[in-house]
Length: 375
Image (cartoon, rainbow, N blue to C red; front, side, top):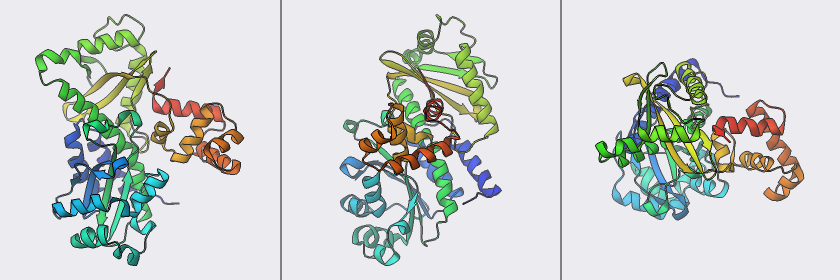
């Protein structure tokens, strides 16, 4: 079993502190590509919003360490999109965890790829890539009509084939954090876009600013309306949060301060109503010594296999647990997912191990808790 050294853990914690600082969507990519190589060494790092259904790369952000790819190379990348071994594997399996080129092709086979290698990687002296597709929940993906990203691909490049299992482990640990940072940055961007006319629209946004002690410093009118609607009330105490929300904030602040779990980022709190849901995000801003709550009212979400990947399950494990939540037995799950009953049982065992539980009900409840779902 691969183990992390103390210096690796310190690098990860420093990266997470920088990653989870309040930022908008355009700034997140450059932030990741400038700081991620400090955790996993890379000659070239990319943060690429990608529309997989149409196989087009949109607005890729690249490290400036060895220069941007020429426009012709980007055109080749689009034309030869399906030639990439990791892309082919992801489209076939839906597994976005960290993989290298060496996982699928030998050095000789790689050199035979005219588009990806001969026209791109060879020209910039790159022989290996470590790639992950972030587990962005369906509800957070941007509409295709906006011509923006459906998936985020993070890739690290080296001139030698020397990515280690430790590098793979670290990138897999960072996947949920990178996905959460993307969702938070997208929420921040939405708020920024809605506040172009700041004096008029500020009161229409659901924002609560908190002191390090958890006391309310700023509460917009929209935040007051949402708190009044979703919490027992009406909410009249503008100087403090509702009791349930205050307890959640204290718990998350303690987790942020201690950084006790690398693989357990601060997930949003979701409170379901009849046809809508209130999504509350806690975003730290250490430089200002304060915290912000971003309140958004969205269409009601559904417990889905994709959302279960956020709590550390593989796509297949997430599908199995989702069917369990629907009350299906092992034999029924095997028919639904077209797999053997023994395979279903193996997936259930792996879920138990990851969640440290012993029953199916406990596994489902654990997933609800981790996702911040509150009926």
